[in-house]
Length: 532
Ligand code: ADP
Ligand code: MG
Image 1 (tube, rainbow, N blue to C red):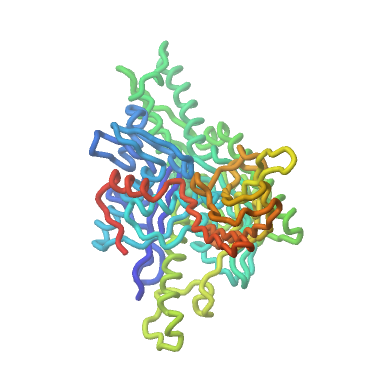
Image 2: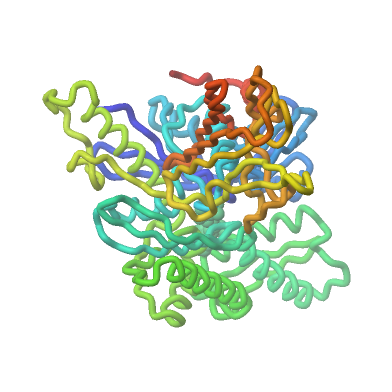
């Protein structure tokens, strides 16, 4: 049996960790509070102590300067985040969340968690993915893979690459909404279209309910002042409101206890009322879902969705399935909502590890004494699991216009291209007698690709990749450029200058942090050492 590989859903609002049990099915490992998911919130109590999870989430409004949430939205950005006098980064904060999940799992299992697969949204570009990998590294983990959330969700729902299905994933989480269309075939999993709203999620439902409860309370209690100005009160009600929202998933009505000064009132909310005040939010998701489907169909005209998967904690609300069924007539496949992604990651990670163990290239003919604990599409057919993601952000090279001498980005690989992908072009030198040429690689920064340098971000170190000691190349000398992005979205770049026969084998570091910064962050995060 190969080493256990854990699946981690590092979510915008909630995170979860999962493993394959002895029966070959995925279990989510509860945290010390007995919850399946842990809020992705960190509270820095003082210089040396921090808290991750529910307690941190409850401290948010009262200690806003010492608390950070939604850090996933900052992944891939160069940001300095200062708490209690220490400088952190999105990666190091994420590492604290990962460490919390892993340490609590270690305590429950009395086993060391080392090997992990971490999930990322399908729209994450190279930089964000590499930042996620770095976060795992800082947490002292051995990151075996990075996999897209909708793909993980589909795996958890039992879909296999050989299945010949077209799957639509509707993922409504706490702070984001993601739609994905993908096809599964003998060739693997191909992501066809990705869309969503990075600022739409369960928190918006909480907010609507909060406003309703607050207005009703103020009216009922006849208050002159706004109790929401009181941070303690605000935080309490916000947390009560989220609990009430979850209750309304099961029950037809829920009560929120509001206590301000000497006044205490129980505010009742019916499911009907809740659905009425949040209908615009549901409609927004329907519009995006439709748009995603249209984009997928435009790309593949014969596309015929065979399964509609419901994912994410907020998809538990009955209004979501009702709306999708009513509006589109979809027959929905329900997953384990906020647990599906972590479970799928564990299945993927363990499947890969077991497959590798059973098929060591060098000993291909050896007896397969140890059976894998479970089978994933392709494992038994000797293929391993193929997943074809798409490139969510275009990548290219910084070029200069020969006439205007203005710089622009020439994208060699386009947004939406199926991975693995490669491209090569022959560029020409612009200056006369060049002895040194620097190549700078860029990734599209915004949602829409643009050749403007400002609309892209550099993924090479500031010095770029440099050919040195060139034999005073005449203007127009050819330089061959080659780029390869593997199925997990990691980029390899090669450049070749024929005259000097110089090959530039650039190990492009696409991390938002450099190695020494990772080491520094490791020290800040402290504790765990990376085991090889
Ligand atoms: P993310 O991946 O974006 O962090 P999750 O998929 O874990 O998010 O979903 C978290 C959201 O789901 C939160 O807004 C939470 O309140 C909501 N949620 C969890 N359980 C329920 C439930 N039973 N009913 C309604 N909403 C729920
Ligand atoms: Mg999620």
